[in-house]
Image (tube, rainbow, N blue to C red; front, side, top):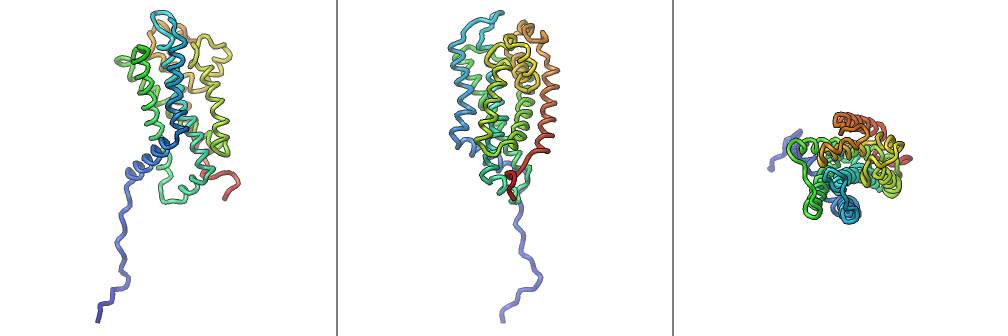
Length: 278
Protein backbone atom coordinates (compact mmCIF):
# COMPACT_ATOMS: atom_id res chain seq x y z
CA UNK A 1 0.00 0.00 0.00
CA UNK A 2 1.20 3.50 -0.77
CA UNK A 3 1.87 5.78 2.13
CA UNK A 4 -0.79 8.36 2.82
CA UNK A 5 0.63 11.79 3.60
CA UNK A 6 -0.08 12.88 7.11
CA UNK A 7 -2.85 15.40 7.46
CA UNK A 8 -2.13 18.84 8.77
CA UNK A 9 1.28 19.09 7.15
CA UNK A 10 2.16 22.44 5.62
CA UNK A 11 4.23 23.28 2.58
CA UNK A 12 7.41 25.26 3.23
CA UNK A 13 6.87 28.98 2.70
CA UNK A 14 8.83 30.90 0.12
CA UNK A 15 11.14 33.37 1.80
CA UNK A 16 10.01 36.94 1.31
CA UNK A 17 12.54 39.43 -0.07
CA UNK A 18 14.07 41.84 2.40
CA UNK A 19 12.97 45.46 2.51
CA UNK A 20 16.35 46.50 1.13
CA UNK A 21 15.85 44.19 -1.86
CA UNK A 22 12.35 45.57 -2.45
CA UNK A 23 13.65 49.15 -2.32
CA UNK A 24 16.50 48.34 -4.73
CA UNK A 25 14.11 46.66 -7.12
CA UNK A 26 11.67 49.57 -7.08
CA UNK A 27 14.48 52.09 -7.54
CA UNK A 28 15.70 50.12 -10.56
CA UNK A 29 12.22 50.17 -12.06
CA UNK A 30 11.91 53.93 -11.61
CA UNK A 31 15.30 54.60 -13.22
CA UNK A 32 14.54 52.34 -16.19
CA UNK A 33 11.16 53.94 -16.73
CA UNK A 34 12.65 57.42 -16.62
CA UNK A 35 15.42 56.77 -19.15
CA UNK A 36 13.00 54.97 -21.50
CA UNK A 37 10.88 58.11 -21.82
CA UNK A 38 12.64 60.32 -24.34
CA UNK A 39 10.53 63.37 -23.54
CA UNK A 40 11.47 63.22 -19.86
CA UNK A 41 15.14 62.69 -20.61
CA UNK A 42 15.27 65.55 -23.11
CA UNK A 43 13.37 68.01 -20.91
CA UNK A 44 15.06 67.10 -17.64
CA UNK A 45 18.64 66.45 -18.77
CA UNK A 46 19.13 68.23 -22.08
CA UNK A 47 17.19 71.45 -21.47
CA UNK A 48 19.45 72.78 -18.67
CA UNK A 49 22.52 72.03 -20.80
CA UNK A 50 21.01 73.91 -23.75
CA UNK A 51 20.34 76.87 -21.46
CA UNK A 52 23.95 76.87 -20.32
CA UNK A 53 25.29 76.62 -23.89
CA UNK A 54 22.99 79.32 -25.34
CA UNK A 55 23.36 81.83 -22.50
CA UNK A 56 27.07 81.15 -22.26
CA UNK A 57 27.52 81.92 -25.94
CA UNK A 58 25.31 85.02 -26.01
CA UNK A 59 25.87 86.68 -22.63
CA UNK A 60 29.63 86.88 -22.38
CA UNK A 61 30.42 89.90 -20.19
CA UNK A 62 32.10 90.76 -16.90
CA UNK A 63 30.09 91.32 -13.71
CA UNK A 64 33.00 92.83 -11.80
CA UNK A 65 35.73 91.36 -9.62
CA UNK A 66 36.82 89.37 -12.66
CA UNK A 67 33.62 87.28 -12.65
CA UNK A 68 31.91 86.47 -15.96
CA UNK A 69 28.15 86.13 -16.34
CA UNK A 70 28.47 82.41 -17.09
CA UNK A 71 30.17 81.92 -13.70
CA UNK A 72 27.10 83.56 -12.14
CA UNK A 73 24.67 81.73 -14.41
CA UNK A 74 25.97 78.22 -13.73
CA UNK A 75 24.65 78.38 -10.15
CA UNK A 76 21.20 79.37 -11.35
CA UNK A 77 21.00 76.78 -14.11
CA UNK A 78 22.02 74.03 -11.65
CA UNK A 79 19.21 75.17 -9.34
CA UNK A 80 16.80 75.14 -12.29
CA UNK A 81 18.01 71.65 -13.22
CA UNK A 82 17.31 70.43 -9.68
CA UNK A 83 13.84 71.96 -9.85
CA UNK A 84 13.16 70.17 -13.13
CA UNK A 85 14.45 66.80 -11.90
CA UNK A 86 12.44 66.98 -8.69
CA UNK A 87 9.32 69.15 -8.61
CA UNK A 88 8.43 69.09 -12.31
CA UNK A 89 9.41 65.48 -12.88
CA UNK A 90 7.58 64.21 -9.80
CA UNK A 91 4.40 66.21 -10.42
CA UNK A 92 4.10 65.07 -14.04
CA UNK A 93 5.14 61.43 -13.67
CA UNK A 94 3.01 60.70 -10.59
CA UNK A 95 -0.04 62.43 -12.09
CA UNK A 96 0.39 60.30 -15.22
CA UNK A 97 0.72 57.09 -13.21
CA UNK A 98 -2.37 57.98 -11.21
CA UNK A 99 -4.37 58.66 -14.38
CA UNK A 100 -3.38 55.45 -16.20
CA UNK A 101 -4.09 53.24 -13.18
CA UNK A 102 -0.48 52.41 -12.32
CA UNK A 103 -0.78 53.75 -8.77
CA UNK A 104 -4.03 51.88 -8.17
CA UNK A 105 -2.40 48.64 -9.34
CA UNK A 106 0.65 49.17 -7.13
CA UNK A 107 -1.60 49.91 -4.17
CA UNK A 108 -3.17 46.47 -4.53
CA UNK A 109 0.15 44.59 -4.54
CA UNK A 110 2.03 43.30 -1.49
CA UNK A 111 4.77 45.85 -2.15
CA UNK A 112 5.21 48.21 0.81
CA UNK A 113 3.87 51.63 -0.09
CA UNK A 114 7.09 53.21 1.13
CA UNK A 115 8.98 51.39 -1.63
CA UNK A 116 7.20 53.47 -4.26
CA UNK A 117 8.35 56.71 -2.69
CA UNK A 118 11.87 55.40 -2.06
CA UNK A 119 12.09 54.54 -5.76
CA UNK A 120 11.02 58.06 -6.71
CA UNK A 121 13.54 59.64 -4.35
CA UNK A 122 16.37 57.49 -5.71
CA UNK A 123 15.38 58.47 -9.24
CA UNK A 124 15.48 62.17 -8.34
CA UNK A 125 18.87 61.84 -6.65
CA UNK A 126 20.39 59.92 -9.55
CA UNK A 127 19.07 62.34 -12.17
CA UNK A 128 20.11 65.35 -10.07
CA UNK A 129 23.68 64.07 -9.74
CA UNK A 130 23.81 63.39 -13.48
CA UNK A 131 22.51 66.87 -14.34
CA UNK A 132 25.04 68.55 -12.06
CA UNK A 133 27.90 66.47 -13.44
CA UNK A 134 27.00 67.32 -17.05
CA UNK A 135 26.53 71.03 -16.35
CA UNK A 136 29.83 71.29 -14.48
CA UNK A 137 31.64 69.40 -17.23
CA UNK A 138 30.23 71.66 -19.95
CA UNK A 139 30.92 74.76 -17.87
CA UNK A 140 34.54 73.84 -17.15
CA UNK A 141 35.44 72.56 -20.63
CA UNK A 142 33.74 75.23 -22.76
CA UNK A 143 33.40 78.30 -20.51
CA UNK A 144 36.26 78.04 -17.99
CA UNK A 145 33.86 77.94 -15.05
CA UNK A 146 35.77 77.89 -11.77
CA UNK A 147 34.67 75.01 -9.55
CA UNK A 148 34.12 75.36 -5.80
CA UNK A 149 37.03 74.51 -3.54
CA UNK A 150 37.52 73.30 0.02
CA UNK A 151 34.56 73.77 2.36
CA UNK A 152 32.49 75.22 -0.51
CA UNK A 153 31.85 71.66 -1.68
CA UNK A 154 30.14 70.92 1.64
CA UNK A 155 27.89 73.96 1.16
CA UNK A 156 27.22 72.81 -2.40
CA UNK A 157 26.20 69.37 -1.09
CA UNK A 158 23.77 70.48 1.63
CA UNK A 159 22.15 73.18 -0.51
CA UNK A 160 21.62 70.62 -3.28
CA UNK A 161 20.31 67.97 -0.89
CA UNK A 162 17.89 70.28 0.93
CA UNK A 163 16.72 71.89 -2.30
CA UNK A 164 16.14 68.56 -4.03
CA UNK A 165 14.30 67.17 -0.98
CA UNK A 166 12.02 70.21 -0.69
CA UNK A 167 11.20 70.25 -4.41
CA UNK A 168 10.65 66.47 -4.54
CA UNK A 169 8.13 66.61 -1.69
CA UNK A 170 6.39 69.58 -3.30
CA UNK A 171 6.28 67.72 -6.62
CA UNK A 172 4.60 64.72 -4.97
CA UNK A 173 2.06 67.04 -3.34
CA UNK A 174 1.40 69.04 -6.52
CA UNK A 175 0.75 65.82 -8.46
CA UNK A 176 -2.56 65.45 -6.62
CA UNK A 177 -3.82 68.74 -8.04
CA UNK A 178 -3.74 67.49 -11.63
CA UNK A 179 -6.11 64.99 -13.22
CA UNK A 180 -3.44 63.60 -15.55
CA UNK A 181 0.11 64.08 -16.79
CA UNK A 182 -0.86 66.59 -19.45
CA UNK A 183 -2.68 68.89 -17.06
CA UNK A 184 0.20 68.55 -14.58
CA UNK A 185 2.69 69.62 -17.24
CA UNK A 186 0.50 72.53 -18.30
CA UNK A 187 0.16 73.63 -14.69
CA UNK A 188 3.67 73.14 -13.33
CA UNK A 189 5.87 74.11 -16.29
CA UNK A 190 4.68 77.74 -16.61
CA UNK A 191 5.00 78.22 -12.85
CA UNK A 192 8.53 76.81 -12.91
CA UNK A 193 9.52 79.12 -15.77
CA UNK A 194 8.15 82.18 -13.96
CA UNK A 195 10.04 81.21 -10.80
CA UNK A 196 13.24 80.83 -12.82
CA UNK A 197 12.86 84.33 -14.26
CA UNK A 198 12.26 86.00 -10.88
CA UNK A 199 14.69 83.89 -8.78
CA UNK A 200 18.00 84.93 -10.27
CA UNK A 201 18.41 82.08 -12.77
CA UNK A 202 18.47 83.96 -16.08
CA UNK A 203 19.40 87.38 -14.72
CA UNK A 204 21.24 88.82 -11.77
CA UNK A 205 18.87 88.73 -8.83
CA UNK A 206 19.75 92.33 -7.99
CA UNK A 207 18.30 93.38 -11.38
CA UNK A 208 14.91 91.83 -10.63
CA UNK A 209 12.25 94.32 -9.41
CA UNK A 210 11.91 94.37 -5.64
CA UNK A 211 8.33 93.11 -5.63
CA UNK A 212 9.39 90.13 -7.75
CA UNK A 213 12.26 89.47 -5.34
CA UNK A 214 9.71 89.39 -2.54
CA UNK A 215 7.54 86.88 -4.38
CA UNK A 216 10.57 84.72 -5.27
CA UNK A 217 11.67 84.71 -1.62
CA UNK A 218 8.57 82.71 -0.71
CA UNK A 219 9.69 79.73 -2.82
CA UNK A 220 12.70 77.39 -2.51
CA UNK A 221 14.23 78.07 -5.95
CA UNK A 222 15.44 81.55 -4.99
CA UNK A 223 17.19 80.22 -1.90
CA UNK A 224 18.66 77.27 -3.75
CA UNK A 225 20.14 79.58 -6.38
CA UNK A 226 21.45 81.96 -3.73
CA UNK A 227 23.10 79.15 -1.77
CA UNK A 228 24.74 77.82 -4.94
CA UNK A 229 25.95 81.28 -5.93
CA UNK A 230 27.85 81.43 -2.66
CA UNK A 231 30.08 78.54 -3.75
CA UNK A 232 30.70 79.72 -7.31
CA UNK A 233 31.20 83.44 -6.71
CA UNK A 234 33.72 85.41 -4.63
CA UNK A 235 32.54 86.95 -1.36
CA UNK A 236 32.86 90.41 -2.94
CA UNK A 237 29.71 89.74 -4.98
CA UNK A 238 27.70 88.93 -1.85
CA UNK A 239 27.21 92.69 -1.51
CA UNK A 240 24.90 92.53 -4.56
CA UNK A 241 22.48 90.22 -2.75
CA UNK A 242 19.41 91.89 -1.18
CA UNK A 243 20.77 91.40 2.37
CA UNK A 244 24.37 92.15 1.39
CA UNK A 245 25.45 88.63 2.40
CA UNK A 246 24.87 85.06 1.21
CA UNK A 247 22.55 84.38 4.21
CA UNK A 248 23.47 80.69 4.29
CA UNK A 249 21.78 80.27 7.66
CA UNK A 250 18.52 81.55 6.24
CA UNK A 251 18.99 79.42 3.11
CA UNK A 252 19.15 76.31 5.31
CA UNK A 253 16.18 77.48 7.40
CA UNK A 254 13.90 78.22 4.44
CA UNK A 255 14.76 75.05 2.54
CA UNK A 256 14.33 72.99 5.71
CA UNK A 257 10.95 74.63 6.33
CA UNK A 258 9.87 73.77 2.79
CA UNK A 259 10.88 70.14 3.41
CA UNK A 260 8.58 70.01 6.43
CA UNK A 261 5.78 71.82 4.62
CA UNK A 262 6.13 69.53 1.60
CA UNK A 263 5.97 66.45 3.80
CA UNK A 264 2.81 67.67 5.49
CA UNK A 265 1.23 68.46 2.12
CA UNK A 266 2.14 64.99 0.81
CA UNK A 267 0.47 63.31 3.79
CA UNK A 268 -2.65 65.45 3.44
CA UNK A 269 -3.06 65.37 -0.34
CA UNK A 270 -1.52 62.23 -1.84
CA UNK A 271 -3.99 59.87 -3.53
CA UNK A 272 -3.41 56.44 -5.09
CA UNK A 273 -6.24 56.89 -7.58
CA UNK A 274 -8.12 59.66 -9.33
CA UNK A 275 -10.98 61.48 -7.67
CA UNK A 276 -14.34 59.81 -8.16
CA UNK A 277 -12.90 56.33 -8.83
CA UNK A 278 -13.29 53.29 -6.62
